[in-house]
Length: 239
Image 1 (cartoon, one colour):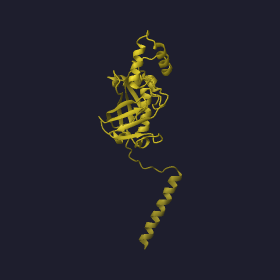
Image 2 (image 1 turned 90 degrees about the horizontal axis):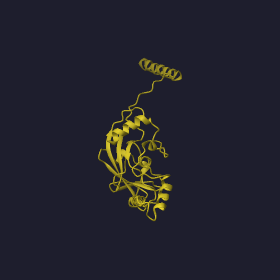
Image 3 (image 1 turned 180 degrees about the vertical axis):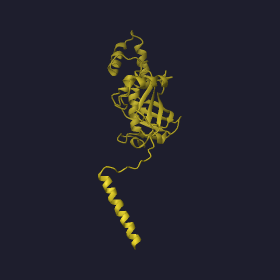
Image 4 (image 1 turned 180 degrees about the horizontal axis):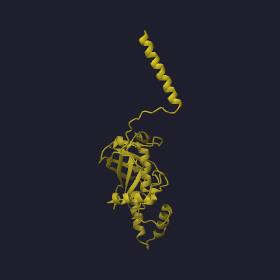
């Protein structure tokens, strides 16, 4: 009997001490293991573009496909004005609020790492179902996230050539327009030039790619990281 009483006394004393430490802010929280998301390096190439129009981006594997859509839009230079869809094999992913005529899984619920978990994994990203801008999305590297400034933040590492104008009729329509622009003497040269400059906000150079413009993307998919360090990384990634 006395033995039980001594144990009860110790338990009560321990509880009182714990309450005192809590009031004094001395409670030590248990450290929990954190397993950071791996970092993916992916290359996005506009299919049927010749020479290729591409972007290389870094994105956390925990990013949803909805987030990846914003990253691709910003990196490529699209304006997010049309519907889009991802395809991994026979499975389609997209915005569930769109009116699809086929089964589409909710892109907000699917993480990149869940459907592309190793280098070489490939997705198809289609933007604007009318013009059908189809992109090949290839996982180039998967690296453990070691922490540090900027880690886990989507980032464009490099790319080549300008994004085509929106609503120009797809890749074939784009090249038809560029062909007309090469002939100032053609009947529709001025009309084509005026249309494309209105669509792109100025003279259009199909060979131009401005990394700084991507990093300050209006869709806010990328963080405003240090330009100099990013530029050095981009030069290495583009090689």
